[in-house]
Image (cartoon, rainbow, N blue to C red; front, side):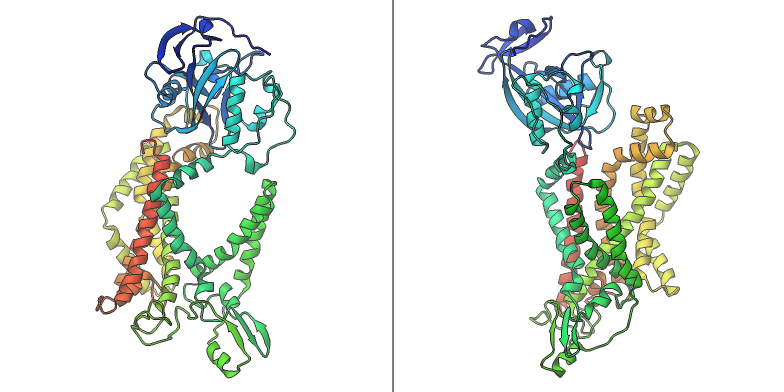
Length: 581
């Protein structure tokens, strides 16, 4: 069916097949002309949850090609490339800032009986409010895939829009657009599985992963995190599996749920994560088509995994399993690759790296490899948990001071300025000395609390600045005008729009917390013996760093990798969230 186009006085910039500008021509003179070709540029505006911005004209008219077929777009002006035209139209038609980052989706050439168009399509994630020209828009809203496939929403689709939507669906991993020869959209036969729906998280991850610095950062984090998580299976003085005359047993299992260490909570936290992560992945796999059930199953699995850690009681067991094996040749045991406990005296002090002790031994004869892996648990736990504490405090205060303002803002910021005047590291030393005098054994929890309670200042100022910038924007005023509760406005509307700088700051703050913990441990105010820590190993080599080079090299290298990895990851995240990156 040949479509007719209403004649009007709209002018187009027209090009010949070679791409040279011919001049301006009336729209009615351009359509169907075999020697002329239009060049247009469109921007597909996506909501973060995957919906696509489309505009439906009033009455029974179709969704039109051109300016409003895929969110916004228009014919290029002389000298404009696709992206420049897209930014101009985005600014003129929607009032969106022209410096927001666009990502190229695809280009296509559309030929039909009416016209031939070369189209460059770009994507933009909806990052806040915008104001469209009311005289050109009858209904402006985000459309889900089901709405796009609902024939009740419009009568027919133009060939241009149908062609673009086919490519958009393909690019977004949606099922293909069903259509007949006339471009008519039949009814939807079933909802798309949630995993097949478009999510901009995939695009953000692709952009993040395309940055080599970010890839190096993620690789460094995994290099430290995975061995630390798997430490009970890589480093263990108790057999993973034991066969004696009494039968088969797993001596390490009880101590997996109830570690015999002073820092019980941190060890249980990592062991809990080691048990929970594979089960959650399995639940996600099994319930991929039922997302609502997935949440219930995940919660049930989390509670079941927590039960043995609560019910298992710690028991002191000094059994020498090597002597058990030597007592009877029929006995058999499967040990971890490093068959030593981080607290076990297994050799002479300060032995150099060898086949038996891969990284040597420390000042009293404990295996350095075992202490390095368990020290990684300490550093990662302190870095992440202390930063989470600081994140919660800083974000909450920053949101409140920026949103409410007035006397609350004045008093809070004066308190912040007073706290800034104290030297942070000196304050840490004083607090750690006080807690040590109180004989509190959970030294890691002390460090987490102290670093968290002293590390929120900068984040509070950052969040306050972002909130002040967003506080006067129309979308916050709209929330207030319709009577939304303040807490809902802050948590569900304001916080998501200021989360980018918070996530970036979080990554950099983790690196700083790891370095602070190691510094405190090196000075003797951090993690207390016999708990392993990288700073404690460095302290043991203080008397003669060159003679005890293995106690300097390995923890120093681990700290370098940890700090660099989190900084590199933060830099990669900055390039995603910062429009000027």
